[in-house]
Length: 254
Image (cartoon, rainbow, N blue to C red; front, side, top):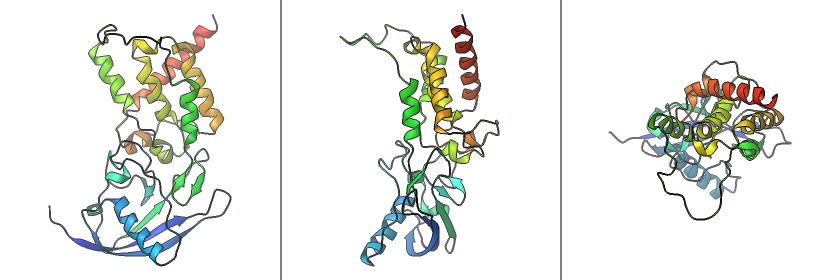
């Protein structure tokens, strides 16, 4: 693939903290390699801002391998940018053309308040997991790997749901800021495995209750969450979540 350099105009959201009003600031970046990642381009810009005794742009990152989900930002109005099933850290500058203007902003959701600039507080997801996204296990020696056989179809579907990295792109893409795709992926992951059985009656009820408490919106099944999910989590998981919730509600009435 041909390598080339480009000049870009960035319009970046700057906000001191969750209590202050934010605004877009414009930056010019020059001689950016087409093979740089989007976050490497931000590194270059921040180095320049530091040299100019200016405040660098705060953005979240960790693994830079598409695993942790920390690199969450809107790029030209799309979570994680223009490439499909891709995280921001995996987005490369060849996705843009010389002279482009790129708008970068944080997730916009009540449950994800801005901490600073492009960094948002996504601990609401952690609290949903704490409410029920776990299993009970007995301590002691490790059980043989084949002691609890699982059908391959169920194992594959569970694994696909477990691929969710909790980045919040589904919430950012949803017009209602719904967390249903995230919650349904976590519920499906455990509902399909025998290890998830002990908490099955309470897990879905507790997680949905916490989701509502955090201020996430309702699902209206537009499919925007699936379309922007970097791991391709299927919206069919939401149907399973509703089924699990109905079953748990009926069982609790007996």
